[in-house]
Image (cartoon, rainbow, N blue to C red; front, side):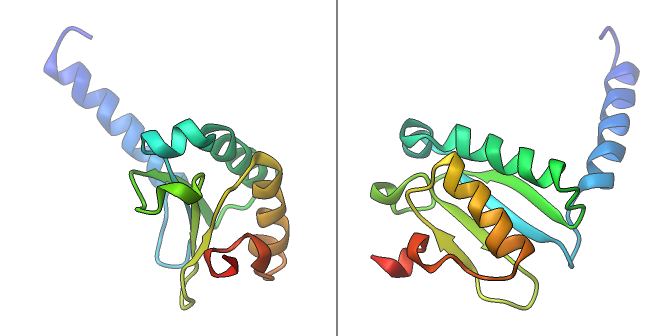
Amino acid sequence: MKSLAELNAIKEKMKNKIAVRGENENSTRIVVGMATCGIAAGARPVLMALNEEVVSKDLSDVVVSQTGCIGICQYEPIIEIFEPGKEKVTYIKMTAEKAKQIVESHIIGGKIVAEYTVGSI
């Protein structure tokens, strides 16, 4: 990259890619806590598993994203699910395997996996 014009071209190209897979008001959002506490507790494999499941199952209306500290560090890794018109669901002490189960049961099947939620403690 040697000029501002080249940087702007890269920015525009990436904006279009993000807009294609980005969220809209009807998207389900899966948010993974990726502050240092989450990363130390194993959030990175959880994030990767969620991304892989969403892509492999071709869930075009589901967006996986990262956030900073969610505020309950002792329960990391944490994921939050935001579905249009529904209450947020917070899953705690996630693993890659549990994350795959969440996609299958909650995101695809519509059934909250209660034993992994913050309400189960």
